[in-house]
Length: 224
Image 1 (tube, rainbow, N blue to C red):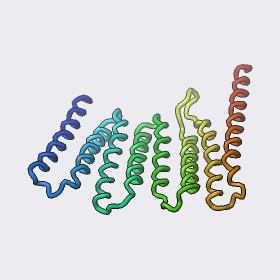
Image 2 (cartoon, one colour; image 1 turned 180 degrees about the vertical axis):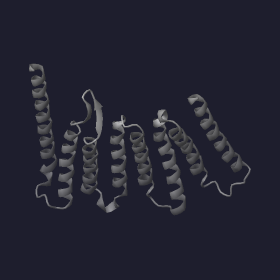
Image 3 (tube, rainbow, N blue to C red; image 1 turned 90 degrees about the vertical axis):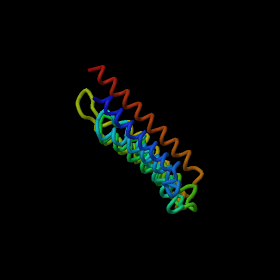
Image 4 (cartoon, rainbow, N blue to C red; image 1 turned 180 degrees about the horizontal axis):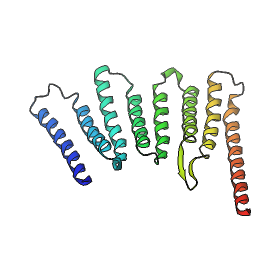
C-alpha cells in the first residue's frame, strides 16, 4: 500500500510537470516568467501529499518546504522585484523542520535546523546599514534561543520523559557572544575588543564546570 501511494503521488507530480511543459511549448501559457514557480510548487505539493498521507513520510516535509519556498521566492521576485527572497525561503524551510518535529516528537533534532532557519531569516531581513555587530548579535542570540528551546523539549529516556541538559551549554556560550555584540552595537561596551575573548573564556569555563559535574555524578552512581 505504501509503495502504491508513493507511486501515485510521484506519477501525479510527473504528469503535472509534463503538462506545464507541454502548455509552455504550445504557447498556451501567456508568459514563462512563472513557469519555474509552478514547477517548484508542483514538486513541493507532491512531497506535501506524501507527508500528509502517512506518518512514515515525515521526511517529505523537508524537501517539500524547500520547493514550496523556492516557488514563493520566484513568485515574490516576479511580482515585486524585492530582495526578500532569502527571508521567504528560510521561513519556509523553518516551517518544514517544525512540521517534522510536530509530526514525530522523537525527531527532536529538527528543532535545531528550525531555529537556525528562523535566525537566518531574521539576519537576512535586517537593513543593510545594520551590518556588523547587530547582525552578529542577532545570529548568536537566535542560536542561543534555539538551544535554550531545545532544553525544554521532552525526550524519551530509560526513566521516561526527560529534558536534555546539554543544550544549555551552547545556549549560554552563544548568549554571551550575542550579548557582547549587542552591547558593542549599542556603544555601551567601552572595551569592545575584549568582548569576544572574554566570552570565549567564559564559555570554556562553563564547559569545564559541566564536565566536572557530569563526572562527579558518574562517580556517585558508580559508588552507589
